[in-house]
Length: 120
Image (tube, rainbow, N blue to C red):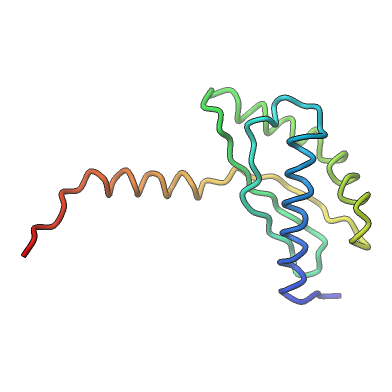
């Protein structure tokens, strides 16, 4: 059964908050300290959720370690989502590094290097 787009958006916001808090406070894994969930996309049938994240850490090894930790914790995260009791079916979840913010930063850097237009 397909849900309304509004419901998918509400579920996505709730999942972002719930999983973000769990990762930050209750996971017990220090690798998640620098992680922030930037957005969540939920399929129309609510059976699949894609979590996008960024890292504050700049160590080149950190993204790989965090990705591995997220994959290892996927079952526990689904369990936590199920404990919330708001969804009949707990969605399958995937994690993806959010490259959108890096793109914005690159554009801002390029724009900052441009000469301002002449007044006239």
